Every structure is written in structure tokens, then in C-alpha cells.
Amino acid sequence: MSLIVQKYGGSSVSDAQAVKRVAKRIAEARRAGNDLVVVVSAMGDTTDELLDLAAQVTPLPPQRELDILLTAGERISMALLAMAINNLGVKAKSFTGQQAGVITDAVHGRAHIVDVVPHRIRETIEKGQVAIVAGFQGVTAETNDVTTLGRGGSDTTAVALAAGLGADVCEIYTDVDGVFTADPRIVPTARKLERVTYEEMLELAASGAKVLALRSVEYARRYKVPIHVRSSFSTRPGTLVIEEEAMEQPIISGVAHDRSQAKITVVGVPDVPGKAAQIFQVVATAGANIDMIVQNVSAAKTGLTDISFTLPASDGTTATTALRGVQGEIGFESLQYDDTIGKLSLIGAGMKSHPGVSARLFGALSAAGINIEMISTSEIRISVVTRADSLDDAVRAVHTAFELDVESGEAVVYGGTGR
Ligand code: ADP
Ligand code: ASP
Ligand code: MG
Image 1: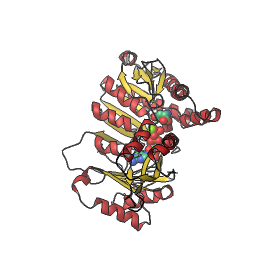
Image 2: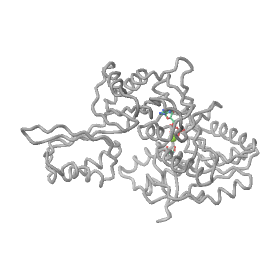
Image 3: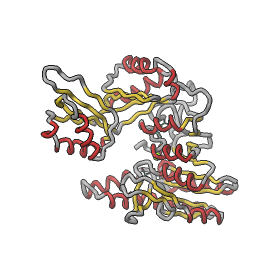
């Protein structure tokens, strides 16, 4: 008998019919003799709709209240799912993150899980019942307030519970058959990966492949939780995310894209020691996570240089406001803000030992007539910034240039709106 933690994403429980379909799947897995803990996301695009609602009542909702609002989405789906399972003759009980013992720090909106004390979940499975847990939420010991884990956070809830309960596997059920060499919504000829290492999955997730939330992969790697990403709409085997194997790594495991970034250019920065430190100190204090950085050669005549960097567009206003506040002190001329950029990343553990990967990437983009605005690399990743409206073409061109397309059996997208 195995202990399985399953997680169903919003697209898998988008309406009552879908909830019933998922309930049937869970009842079958329980009847097959497995102990089951099920983490569920809010139905469909509920979280985005709640965010839209909040924006209609205030431009700057207090983070504590926003968290209370957003956790309601998962409460709805957890209760409905438990009802639907009970209706099939299998006992199930639902729990909020707090009741499930998900303890976080106090950073509203992007809280980190600091402990998992799942007493009530253990009790429930010991009684032979299915425990349903609301994803994406916890409680902070500091104030006893509810917190949320950041977008896609139900994946992290599932992995954390799997680690805390010592589950045999954490199954992430979504609207595609697994992790593909590119987003199937953009590249229908993408190939499903049978397995991918934590290291590569970390880079994919960090580069925008939202099929798994970045934090969930970090957590899984730390606690060695095997993840199985698969579809809730089919019975096909999905992708295993596991530790690096002794075997040779593929050169390229996939192409990821990210449309959520923006670029700030600080124009006319005095080219003297300490200016970059000042700029990035201000941005860090504002709480923005910067990604790529480019500093131009200083024009000898003027002694001035331009510094560009990318950051999540959601941090754009805070960062630009903070920088404007110190313009006089740092002495730069002006700021440019651009949120019409796209980021493409090519990821593969085998690139460490294979020369020529960058040349092929840049060649593919050039042949497709796509201009590269910024470049950054890690040991197993190369990322470039392009115009947002050429990102899809860029992804397809690079995917083809690295011979990742499959001939037949196109990647299926079963549901979801891609929002
Ligand atoms: P869920 O609602 O189940 O949490 P998400 O929308 O968060 O689902 O994640 C699934 C989506 O991730 C897919 O529909 C797909 O569009 C997108 N995606 C992006 N990159 C990839 C990739 N490399 N492989 C599979 N899916 C990907
Ligand atoms: N409902 C939350 C979101 O949309 C959490 C999740 O789905 O994982 O981000
Ligand atoms: Mg998700």
C-alpha cells in the first residue's frame, strides 16, 4: 500500500462536472488500496478573478486582506471535492492550510513554508479517509493570520505535505500530459520528457515553464520528493522529476519562455565605482528580484554609461519609484521602463560539455529575423530577451533548430485558458 499525495490544478477542477470527474479518479485510487492526500487549487481562473475584484475596490489592497480573499478560492474547491468524493461512497474530509498544519513565515503574498505539522491529515488517513487540503495557503505563527504562497503555490503545498508525511510520490495533475520540451500551447510539436532532473526542472520553472512552481521544485530537491507530473484528463504516464542519474544527460531538455518580465534602463549613470552597487541596493530594498543585468561601455567623452536590468513586471512600479527617489543622489539622467519584452531560455544539463550551443541559438534567432536585446547564461541555461510580440516565433524557431520537434502525436492541451 502506498501513500500518495495528489495535486489537482485549477484547470482540472474548473466546474462542477470537472470536480466530479476528479472525484471519480480519487475514489478509484482509494479503492485500489492507496492512502491518499489530495491538494486542490482554486477552480479555473478563480484566483485571477478575485485579484480583478480586489483591483476594482482599491489600487493598493492591503496584503493581509488580499491573502484572506485569495485563500477563499481554494476553500471552495476543497469542500466541493470532498462532497463529490463522499457522494461516491468514499469517505473524504477537507482541511484549510491552517488545519493541515502548513506553517509559513509572515510574508503575505509570497510566504515560505517553514514547517509542516500534519497531525489532522495523519489522523484522517489512519481512519482510511481521503484528506483534501486547500493548496497555496498556510498560517503564520507570528500573528496567526492566513498567508498565501505566491502564484502556483498549490504545487508547493503538495510537495511539502509529501515531504512531511513521507509519501512515496507526489503526483501533480494538470491539463497537459507532463513536462514538454516547450509549452504545448505555443509548440504543438513539443515532445514529452519521460524524466527530467531536479536541476533542469529548477531552471525550466525559474525561466517561466509554469507547469511546476519554482518553489515546489526547490522543496522537492531538498527533501528528495519524487514528483510525477501528469494529466488529470488522460491516464498516460507523465514526466518524473527525479535526482540526476549517472547516465549521460541530453544536451537540451527544453525551451522555456516568460512574458511576465519588464526591463528598466538607467540612462546616463556616472561611470565611477559604487554606482551599480547603489542602484541595485535601492532595487533590492524595494523588494524586487532582478534577473539579467547589462552595462554598456561608457562613452569616453561623457564618462556616462547605461545600465539595463530585467525584473518581474509586477515589481516594476515599486522599483522605478524607488529609483526616482534617489535620482539626484546617484546622479543618473533618466529612467526607461519597458514591459513589452519576452524572455526565452534554452535549458539542458548536457550543454556544460557541448560547445556551439550559443552559436546555434543565436543563429536560429537571426534566421527568424528576431533581434536579441539581452543575454545571460548559467551552467545549464542560456537566456535572451526579445520583443514580446516575437517571443512565440522565437520559441518555435529555437525548438526546431535544436531538433526537439516530434513527427507525430502532437502535444495535447486538455483544458485551461492559459491565463
Ligand atoms: P494547473 O492549473 O494545473 O496548476 P498551470 O497552468 O499552472 O496548471 O500549468 C500547466 C500549464 O503550463 C500548461 O497548460 C502549459 O501551457 C504550461 N507550460 C509551460 N511550459 C510548459 C512545459 N515545458 N511543459 C508543459 N507545460 C508547460
Ligand atoms: N490558485 C493559486 C493560483 O492560481 C494557486 C495555484 O493554483 O497553485 O496561483
Ligand atoms: Mg499551476
